[in-house]
Image: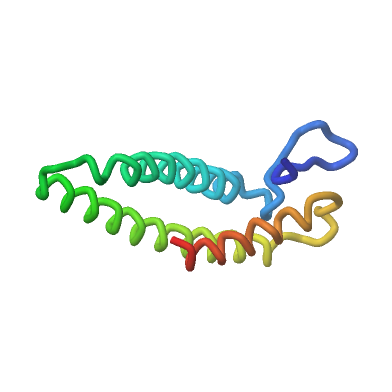
Length: 115
């Protein structure tokens, strides 16, 4: 909720990460897609014992492994991208939301290991 902010003299919102809209979009995008993928793979895990075809099981396991590897890489890219943009953000532009930005960077770092 605090990824976008504005200056007191303008109602125009901008991304808190160095006014780079791509940084906010990237973080939001991989987060939402990761959430949806977790729901999908959770449902696959629930129905996994009922799948009798070993070939289908193998492909599901490989898809889960491949997706986890890809998403680990994407979280690493996200961590580097957000950290870089936060380092270039002028301190006088951040009035509210600095803690949220740091939390987004921290959780993107921990997501590397959890994926």
